[in-house]
Length: 319
Length: 308
Image (tube, rainbow over all chains, first blue to last red; front, top):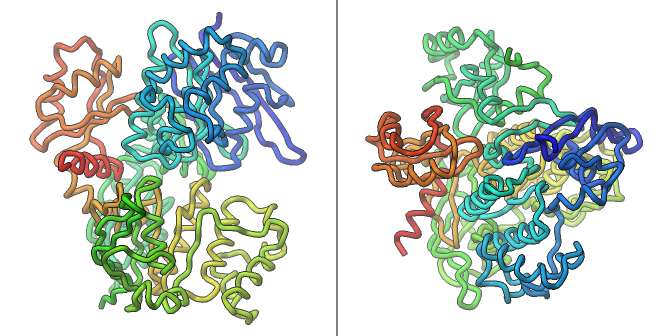
């Protein structure tokens, strides 16, 4: 069997005039959490639907655990657990009844589902709530139940479409802890493909691909992607912010300025960091009305990286 | 010169035994952009509903532009705009038709006033587009236009840019900053740390309580007891277990390919390295990280749990 649980090669899918997915290639290993990161409409959900063979690609190939999804979709799907964004639980069934329903739909026999369900409920820490109606669970618990259902058939490839939207950060930590345990399970490490429009979620993945208009515009670990902008992001404080911002946009070497609450984030061209910093420090009052209070280099965040990739100013790729 | 637009004192809302909003107090000045950050169910929307006079406070007091929010709700609503995340736009009507319809609801009939709003949000060229042909970013702008149609001086935004392209989000926020410069006061509720970073001050809500409210920089500087580190090592779970035992480590969390560690102020990278010396793992690197609002939120939530 191949080293990858998911292999996508040159995948393309059009809907009429729109290229929903365009020449997309990616691979996910066992033990890896891969984040597909981009705004609504970037092609994330279409990619997932192509992977589960709910849609037919126009071009390209998908293999799940080595199985060609166009030739043998049924066989491939056996390896997949899918938690879709618009996943709906039966609110008037209990936690256990929900799992049973979905287990039977997926063809698990009566003997199999019960022990497996209890095992999974223990894993997601919902055992105590097995008789509670799904409609009476908190947001975080519903998410965990959704995950439990996706796991009932022991998938090796887990597809999660925006799983922790709106969940308490404390609960979200727990959810991610579960994902990490899953991918690291020594006996059967799982591969996870997760989609999200949020950078704080993306930063938790092992590897991410930035998607925009159907294309993968950059790929790497979160640290690698951020590192491509190392030394090129400055934080500037001063007043009034709007005037300061307009002035900064004219400074030589400055690529982009944006307001960030009580401060500005400035992206400078490669090699201009010191020049821009010197200029700001030597002239703290570039015009009678503007005052610069501080300017310092900051560690780029993922959003800075996404912006740089998306704004057509190509970021030099690593050698 | 500051002018208080929102004044909230010990505001409380109970539904039976459940305390949805628990003795919350804060003030918002004219032209400020204040974020109200918390997970779903933490009391954000309940607070907004009380501020708009839609829900009677069980206890406490709130005023907007000096008007009592419950007894003078009409006066408050005439001066406030509300953009809800689940705003109902008519998909089979054009941009202009939607605007004219909602304008009518507020008693705004002058073409000039509608044009003005369309221009503020930059939708002039899409006026004849059907709503269902617009991208999420443009729809959000139309929802904003509708919230602005009666020229409110206070704007409530409920998760305004969820699901929007980061480029479109920044453009949207530029609009918000311009409105604030023109004197409009803005209260943004959100559960996204990303979005809260754009606000001038941020209040953090959890389980009905306002845990803190300050500028993002001040929250990071004052709430966190010490520095945040990114620790790269393999395997992560082994690192997680061992780091929790290291003297001076306050919190360890998983973050993709590394661990995020909050320590007491006197701890340095070398202390962490020493603490991990005998652990069965491969240490690849330790670096200082910029604190995030999520670090702040988790720290405040941890304190709340301890106090219980």
